[in-house]
Length: 199
Length: 199
Picture (cartoon, each protein chain N blue to C red):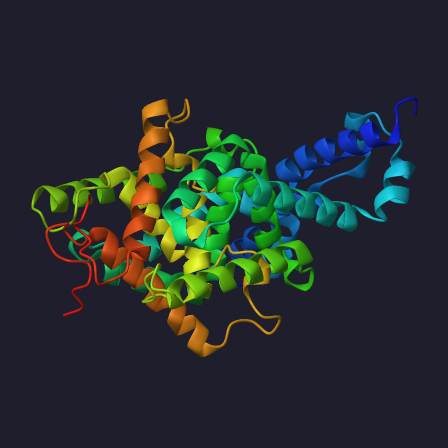
């Protein structure tokens, strides 16, 4: 341990992100994280308490970064979905961490406060925007939030058969972005206005 | 091995579905599948070749059952999404198998023919419906298909924080279904018609 503690923490964070994104929570190994971060395994336990707590700390930090990079805007959900799509395309590992959290057995007993707070905050913002008539209210705020989140991640968690073996080309990446923005636009445009309106 | 081969195959299929849905592909253990199916582990290898091939056979069979239970209808995508939502709500393990296939490292090198065929078949059907003006063509058929599939699975793969600890109640399950059907309706309704039309 020659490096300062801030730098060590960052190395552990990066290594843990990569390890959890690839292997999930059950499959992740703290000794691989330690080796990759060039940190002491015992030090990781001292800092974070357990593999489980390390996972939750890593997810909470990514939630914070995501909210900072893509500020939530209930009044501009189509643009928000486009920006969130860009974020997950650039950082698929973040969407993967969330997917393991959704998928692995027993995760329902491990609620992460940062995610609960983000959901509560955004749901309130959508509810206000609906009350003001800025967002269509055919779909309630709770469901609408879940749907726009799923839209932003459509391809990050799609089966491999949805991509050519060489991965999507740049035109395809652009078409996908346009598609989720357009889907959201139609969903949130108040019903009084025609869906056909492209102006 | 007292039981007939058809029954044994079904037991192995059920046990493999549960094991892969819970533990993923890397985490699944053929000896647990054998124990649960009351089958001989060697017999599983004789029948299926490998754990990998067993996974692919299980997924291919679920794809077949899904397509039979929820026939694809490009001209009635909102209803199709509602029925697909019901299917995954009743069989979350099927959506989970797909999620592991999307999530685990190395899966991009294991394309499953049944999934490729389903995508190709449905994409053609949407393209025809768009050419006929039945489905709006603002979003291309490839992207539209990926989006309606993601919509149908929104809550099966959502993080645990989107559900109360006791799970969603029946009103919530109904609201979710209505939300994905309505999202799809707005997406596929040809742009000439107003989105506000609820008739």
